[in-house]
Length: 303
Image 1: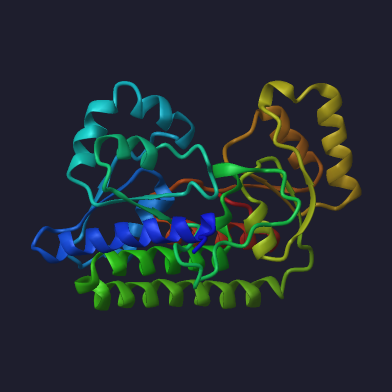
Image 2: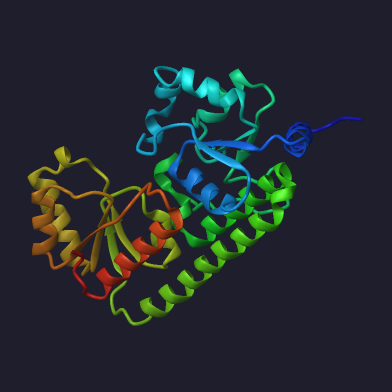
């Protein structure tokens, strides 16, 4: 019988899940590692009230872009020790192929299981919906800023975690239901609030918010994520013209821009809205970001 690569991959993954389930059922509390704010944050929500131990493999403020260097450098001994006693890791390799947590953890524990928060192991559940033509790849794209995608990620993680810790299924299912109820409420409330806004045009100076903008059905006039040093007088003049010509209501950023950029935004009649990224509670972060965007579109100047 000839197996496809997909079938073989699935078989190996399921074997790993089964072996780890046996370990958990033999009295050893399940131990799970995560290193990104989104994977740790969703894991914390789903595993609340269970006996499953969720541990950070890296400091909460360590950017994903620096984790490979950390795990292969000064953080290597700590990760090796954590991985030896861990049953699974939660990562995002289907979205971010350079995610180092699973491959490096596996060096210390060949039996460790990978939970990919963006791709279900068995294909029964849909993975995240990727925007066609999105030029931003990896972590910066932050597809979980779409409430639909965050719900799908929670579904995928919950399904795998229940397989690993079947005794925790009632609590994980309840936590998942509560999380998805919050997301449904957020979607309904934001749709109702946006219906009262006259101008839904936005300009983004960050590459983090494509999915947030798409999820709220806003009109994206332009994206320019250049660093502050590249905002030359000519670039600032072009930005001013774009904002004025398109009557842009809100300009989004993930940090405070330079004073020169702020001045152009204000002079053009647009409002700057600085949003959060990589917070510890991803659901609360999404709720807060949506609220800030809608307030900005409604004419409320963020404090």
